Length: 257
Length: 208
Image (cartoon, rainbow over all chains, first blue to last red; front, side, top):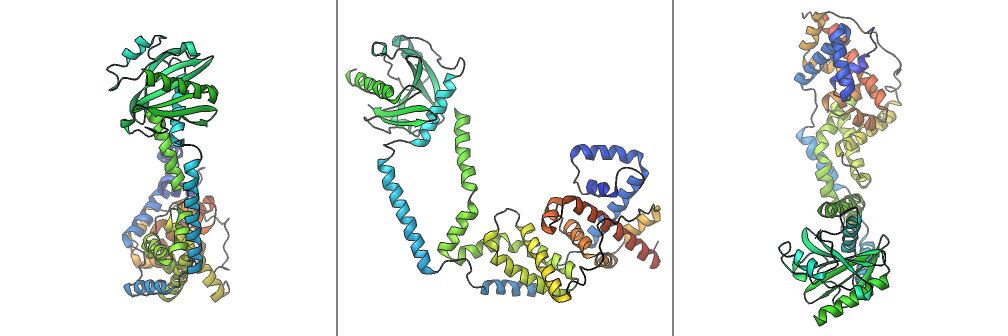
């Protein structure tokens, strides 16, 4: 062919192996190049003849049966001898028991996957104009704001006198449930306290009990506990000691209220 | 929050699917052959027909095709642990092809593969007339079969994989261990030679 498009390209076009751009360009070219048009017609005719002829060879039923028998008679390659298998199973059991026991003592009562979720929510809330739905340092403004938005009433306490001023509240979502987020400040650090009823059954509900358990993720500290049927998760880049202090304060206020 | 939760759980899905071959191997080692065999039966045996077709076209006769296929299937079972991919058909056809070339080398001391084959040969395109198109369309199975068998091995295998087994250029390149560009040029030459063969024999047999 005298044109720049090769017979290979004709074949690739017929086989649907050209990308969309090349394919469209080739179709435009076909309209003005009789050589390529003819080459395409010939290759198409050949393909149709091949398709109509059914040239595939198929194994006879006897051969298929024989092959299946041969394969079935093959010795069990790949399997370990029985003593080796027992060894492996024993080793797996040992690892399982060891990790289960370890999981009971370390890390102390945390739900690691859920801590990631808490940190994500926290980070999102720090993005512009997303921190507080209701910005108020008055607990008597923040608490009623949740009414009608949640099917429970979160306890809202101001801890300004203890160095944790309340700065507002927000409706957030954890595990597809709407939950209350209370926002506190500790110096320049923002602290989110998420709270919802244990009965919600969201992952992380009821975990921790009265003894706050801490973990850290991506440079944030996460601490969680539950009290009076409510689950609490607090998160901040403030130090763990401060979070623990906040947790103790909230626990004490709940008890006395 | 919800999209993030999905991303988080999506991460687990990926992590779980990354190691199925490893887990399968461990399971096979522990529980022996039954599980391995049933996976082999499910993933590889459905492509027995394609394997036979390729073996038959490469060897060009029934008996040799059976020998090659038997060797290939036993090798496939033996090397099944090494199969990590998703394309069991391309994997099996690669084994069939390799088995064929080993068989050919042993038997013929490479006579057929020693056929002069120059990648660079570009047959001159024949600017033919429409009666030739008619000859191509009317080519029957017997003539086409002869045409396929007349192709040199390197052209025949790509033609069988493409036209009869319907594989993509990428799959063919992997099976035949050649670049995609070579797949294209070999297919092009194979089609050209087949056309020439069909036209020449069609004319000889006195059809329109």
